[in-house]
Image (tube, rainbow, N blue to C red):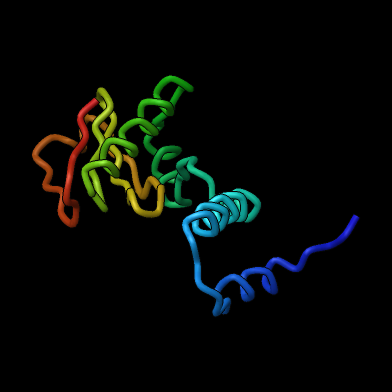
Length: 126
């Protein structure tokens, strides 16, 4: 099996001086999607180390259905152009970077009361 050097291949695509037609754009897009998947840049959300520590210390647990709802909240926020969001899921809250697909921290019901959340540009209530 031939080995392909991804960096060389990327460089060739970027430095290509030949005119690009619609067919090439579509093939480059497909290549980009494949490359991102290979490099691990998929659509799944991540939880930062800080978020995981907060969830552990606050005894916040998520089941599979709740994780899917959070993923749906990310998609909705992204569609609306939100960059940083507050996601409310029942009695659990999450501050998330939509652009980075990362949950930054978690908040419990008690912490939600009489609290102010700054540096967000959207909220998703589930």
